[in-house]
Image 1 (spheres, rainbow, N blue to C red):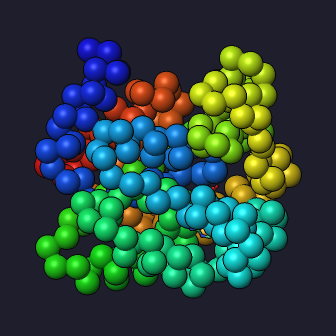
Image 2: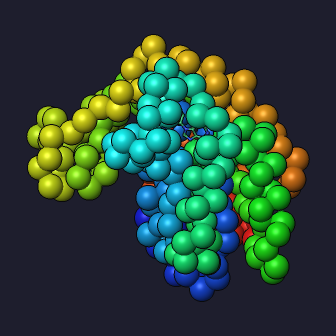
Length: 237
Ligand code: AMP
């Protein structure tokens, strides 16, 4: 069976049952955003990327955005209270009723504790399932420094692994691709330090809870997505 077939059959299956809250965990550049976009197609639930929400606030010049801009530029984490509040507001939106894919949250044990408490308050809601995507350091560095984003359709390219047909321009809408300010080698090193110190314990927190899977992220995108769909199906079953 090809990996594409596996994802499609997951799509049929997944739509029958609400997948509930899914957490995508992993170091910067493992492909959480790319996988979230694949999983939206499979399950029809929204992606909630705290990085995207924060960048939206920066672009709009909100108070949160003004605070977050410099912190993000350094590769550090935005304070828990601000991020939790932002996620709390997002989770009140009706499209989250059947589940959602949290991408980049929780990133600290404080955030994980806050989320666990919030989920425990819901009556009859499905428990969270956490999926950690694994990719080795050198591969991550290549992915981060090669990443280019389309500011219009949010498609993600990589100059090494997934270049656009015309260098520097989006295949879908022709917009000029941009590089995130924090996708440089220097900021990547800081983001990895923050990951090891603050986010790696979050992975262990969810591993200890049992509803946890680890998938190899150094494979074609559709294969990884199929692996996640299978793992979530098994954990929910
Ligand atoms: P990402 O797009 O997920 O790589 O996030 C980009 C940056 O946004 C991170 O390096 C942090 O500065 C900030 N950020 C995103 N999510 C969180 C979070 N859950 N907690 C704190 N900071 C975050």
